[in-house]
Image 1 (cartoon, rainbow, N blue to C red):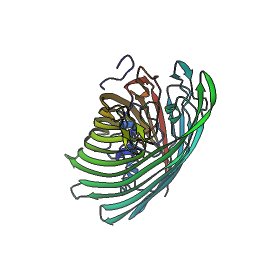
Image 2: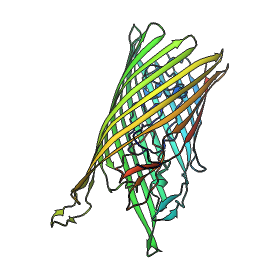
Image 3: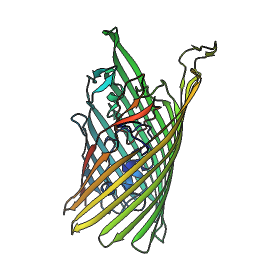
Image 4: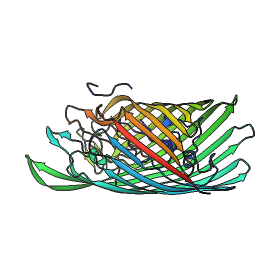
Length: 479
């Protein structure tokens, strides 16, 4: 790769925010990850999202509905989020409101969130003409979450949670179609989690989570076709984006020497992709597929007086198989025919990703705490592609590092508590491809809770864009 091309160097998905701990988001281009799915509170987000050996009293119950957490009283909360890239358009604003019930044997949560998204306004180049998506829309999304947990015996709990989102738009999708004059989006996200947690007398804990996660979106893309430099009319193309994920998560945590703890995690996701959109950065249409992804992680934490240090290391191998199917019979040059429904292109991805999270939190006064952290996510994959039409094959290697610097503060008052988390994301942006027969097209997507599986048409380039995210959580105990 040349110039701004990212050389050997996400998801995550989550990316990825803390809520994605059991849902593993995978992507094949370094698209910028925004705060679209940062809809739940977290105490550890300012600590580089460490989670394996450091408890998160606010965030853990949303990852595993069986967890009651160390908070003893019921409370109401709001956790507004603003996420903005390094240019004018594209801000995401979210306002969640929730109630957390904590009883003797039962606990649960109900929350909703409304969200406003501005389309990214970045100019792309197409056939030596400066083209920007002229229809930059605002989208309004709605989220609803409910969970309930119950003790089945002392120190043993089971819980169930349901998440639903009505999505009028996903951040950055308009830039995946740089030649269009407008993109209308509609769809939904839904997820069910079943969790358990068992705490032993020695303080060790065992957690399990089973989940089913589904994303279904439709993109109605309008194009203004041109013939000999003149517009010839409008054309509307329907693109569907569908992924169904089934997953299992296991976590083991063990305290030792009073102030230390270690943890181990194993997470497996099986993904089916009935439909992957035909974005300009990819080279094949109508692209179904399937993915297997695993997280194997180790965590360590240490408490020294009023300070806490945490470290997570996660290895993420994955395999993905996508392909294109002929929409009609295709007659080849050697007098052979590819019949309708036959594979035209076959893609095999092999990933060897890893993530490193480091975080530090210290009590700065009687009622205040401050935290800092860093999260590094290295994506490394090989694409092997076979073209049945041209009877050719190629291999492409891609690698990049996504860097997230985090900070936070906590302030306790008599009647409420304030939690602030901020982050700066680097190493992602508007990726394109190097291809002498096609332009360098841009693409952004906020996909912390979704997948972005694309077979790039050539070596990736990157116009890096920093992303700043702010989250303020207010909790008010209910007596």
